[in-house]
Image (cartoon, rainbow, N blue to C red; front, top):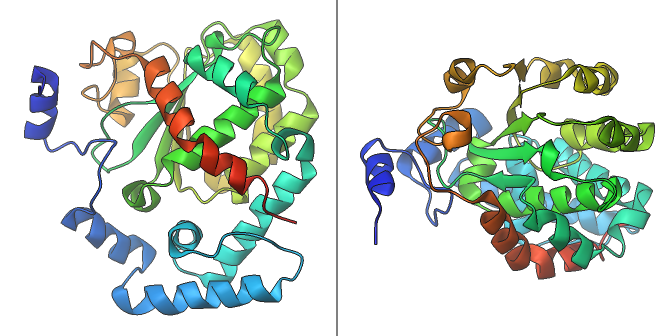
Length: 292
């Protein structure tokens, strides 16, 4: 049964998170922003496959569904798309302790607490919004390495959708409750991982990173992290304090839940993330067997 909230979102033309077709406006966005046309897709995919075949040490999927993620992330510049693919598997190799044999039970445990989830509707630009609530991660129960592996799986799962590949992702980081215990877990090794992931290692168009309820403790972590981010990413970072009206200027209140002054009053992010991870886990495990 369709709820009143769903009826309202449909009336206001908000696209749902789960969408199995490419709306005309998204197709036009792909053409205008990514230079994606019917004429360029097939030869670009074939060129990518050629480059993978020539990279003898690299083992990775070569199906259209997998490769087009990288092409869209780099606006169909095949060389840049191939470098992005290489970087992803080089990063996986550098952190083999996290990704070669991912701790699936540990990942499911932290995900069940709901520290990372997406809202059921996209923003007015078609972007999905990924929420990270840091106070729902207890480093004494789940190590940062397992937490970041789970986050990687969630990011790779949400980018499976072609609409998300075209429109991109906004990240809302709720820093409320960020503690000294958590800060001590964020060592230079994991700061490097986060910076690489945001820069040029994942086939994702990061359209904005929004910090909410940021604390003095977190400001220290940010002062280190921003040094290793590109200017492009730094320019897409926004701080809102605890000002919901400021947040609503960047992320429409219609898609947010009540905790952020939004209209979606009945939403459980933990349920969403568990379903998402359970559905994607087999694919993630297989992908982690690939690479250099």
